[in-house]
Amino acid sequence: MKARPYLIALVLIVLVAGLLVVFRTPSNDPAKQQETSPQAAVEAGAGAGDAYYPTDGNSGYDVTLYDLAITYDPGSQQLDGVASVTATASEDLSRFNLDLEALKVSEVKVGDQPAKFVQEGDHELVITPAAPLAKGKPFTTTITYGGKPTTINDASLGRSGWQISSTGGAFAAGQPHSATTWFPANDTPRDKAALKVSARVPDGWTVISNGIEGPVARSGGWTTFTWSEETPLATYLATVAIDKFEVVRSKLPNGTPVVDAYAPGTSAEKKPIQSQLPQVLAYLETKFGPYPQRAAGGIWVADQIGFSLETQTRPIYAAWADLETLVHENAHMWFGDSVSIENWADICLNECLASYAQWLWLEKDGTDLDQRYREQVEQRRERSSFWAPKLYDMGKGNEFRGVYDKGILGMHALRKQVGDDVFFKALQSWTEKHREGNATWPEFEDHFKQASGQPLDAFFKAWFRDSGIPGDQYLLPVGVRR
Image (cartoon, rainbow, N blue to C red; front, side, top):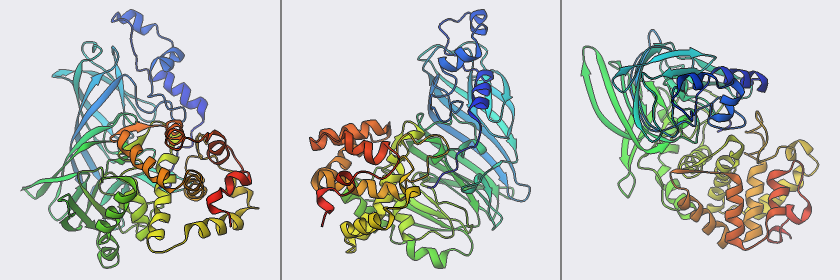
């Protein structure tokens, strides 16, 4: 997906982070805890540690499960929810925070005890339990909340987060932020967790979410749908979509359940595309290793949103999406969903590889990728704007520049530099090594240096770490020279 980073000044972020303290306390003495300065609190663990979004998430605990019960009325656009967040304290905590945008919290319990809470800034829910939480202690926080979910507006991609569909329903999608527009979360890719969703809507509406479909219950004019995703997911990959969907259920050849959902008016055009999912996944398995998810499918909305998104197991597709989009989003089931980024600076691990998967699909059908590569390099040699974006540590606000086009060329150059055998074996060992975990771009570089036995530092610097066109020795590796 082409993402929509927030445009918030770093100074303001740091100031807010100072106010929204999440203590990693060396002592259970409340007096000592209150002495912690705002700057010291930031350094001690307020936020999860991402340099681009320092107030996102929290490093003081590890979430294992989000268990959500929501009710949504498309007529009033009102959402009411109860979120049970099960976690383990990774530090002594006198208080901690979750991220939640716009929705109002009415009650919080930690365990079976009421907890104090306050909503601060634009997304911080700061919770003070009745007693401090000891390092290593599992705990469950139950939050009751409600309101009209917010939509995030961004100049590059338009609308993100909770979105009202043109067909009258709603869906949640976007990155780097989305989940917190409909439930409280530790909003960082570093803290992946399982997800359960119980969603109640008026009869006639259908709810689609991640993972495995559960029982459906009807009572008093309302229908409750249940979904469960056991494979840990990053928060921005969680979704819920509400519409009068046409739902098609099937299975992959190995028995993996597939659920495809089509918003009104989309099925005639999009079914022929979605029907190719089994072939796409089977082909990607030959390149990246076994399919790493427990379910598959897709959600086709009727809206011309600015992106499609790899929501885990069940991507959301915009009205303009085509077969290459389907290939791209499902390549993310390996790169981004199973192997998730540690920092937003590492986003090329997701987007460069998923974009290159589109080229691999074309190669399957006979496209000469070496020729395609040479032609694109020559067409763009003099276009400094094309080569300007850095593909690693590009800076906040630049995460999604270059990764979809320059990133493809960089991946093909890497393939030719190390050779096909090394390239594809290294990709498969990468997805296996980091399955259901997190990884960084420097780790990816080291992985390929070890797999190839080549000193690739200068290559990676020229293509991924520097701005500007690589020198010809890296731009035209031996494998693509005429």
